[in-house]
Image 1 (tube, rainbow, N blue to C red):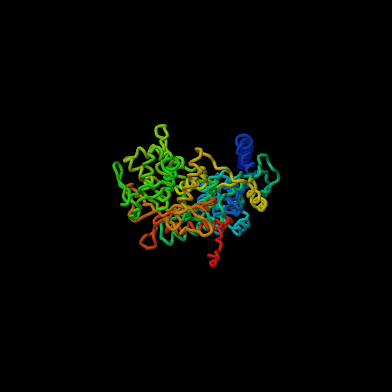
Image 2: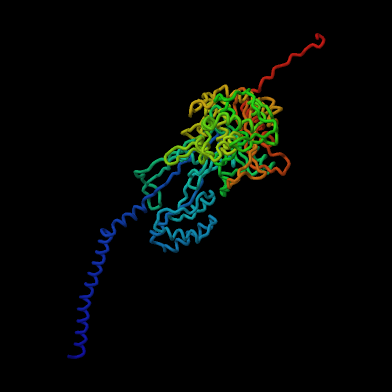
Length: 629
């Protein structure tokens, strides 16, 4: 066979080989395509469908508007305002097949960080950690300018949405009453927490099918409109509240005290017109001092001292043990002792001798009230204190209230009352005489003023409250003039009965007219609280501060307080001011009458003037013609 024949055979063999290989390659390719189609059609159908639906589905969340909080005259204390926020759907980056995921994540992180004044590495870290998620906040509550710059970037999956942010138009006013909200709009403390369910409303959502440009083209089932929260109308009056806060700040700074608390209350209804503590905090502040957020008017207890004496006297009169005009020997030595109890001394070394029961209140005699408590005995005395609400919470509609000390509690399934605990205390006779003038018992400011309101309103128990009304619409939609007129025509709600009448009306009137009115007179301990236009009644208190370890009292530290009401003939307002630890070294005084008396006077005068309460009528004295004598 020659060379040409060999060459032809070789070519023929090669051609035959490729004729076999080509079909095999083609068949293998077709099998691969078939397997791929099968995988897409059957094996991966669910995943593909989910991705397609995710790319076509558009969800728009509509934030509901949190309800406003307004004062009793519809002045705004807390409102919600729309503000842009930016978020991202990380899955859009992951599903974008036209670009590298990591490169796209870095690009987005860098450009967003530059606009939002953030660190790009932090955004990138979050994006990478949540790459399989469909939602991630970038930054909440940004400026409108920042929002417009981000929208101009036109990044897929980066969304500007609007949500409501809480604002407090009157800044720090009534901070302890209002509380505040967290970044998610949930109430924290105060009214924001107490009535959160009413304020929060319900969010809305629009489900739609979107085109390639992410424009909604078809609304889907499951969409719902947002429901705004209710407007909460408070009993608080911003004018009275502002004045109270100003006076508390002044007195705290003047006496370099640790803190001060004040409450202004309607004795007939329990409506709180103002409640404040100083130092306070700004609910709108981004950095709030946690230590100042505690509402000490409700949470902190203290020994009330002499402001407790009217309740001891009331208990004695109402139980029939003594009468308002009865004379009691308060000893000429100023010291009273006997078997089974420690000696009782008059404050400041006074020696009063014989005093009427009214005089015991006017002079604030420790010995006098100690003897009245002994005459009653522990059973009658302590049960009377329970009727006034001591030892349990008042039921005020604000969070964090304490019950005082001792407090009613459950032990082994049995109710152990304040009375039980005081009677069981070591040295019970000593406890009896000490509780009579406000030692060995602790109250909260709101507890004390609530009990005092029962004296002012003729013996009816009341429950303090800050809620006046709930309204289903925005306060801007209300015709304020007609609404206020309607509210003013409403009769005051009847006092809420808890345990019948606390004391007889005559007992309450005698205590006020013959005792506490004279406390503000020339012979009383609160002469600086006198008003010319209205008759003031009240009681001072200068109490030692108990040591934190329970062993005696702090040296040279007092709680200076004054509680009062006016007009005495028909009490319209009651005010309590408590000043903790005024600095005695300043030489300005430290007693309740000196420190707190003038502040309560100013608050009473301002409130009565503001409410247009008629001044007392002073009888005219007829002139006498001297020539006719």
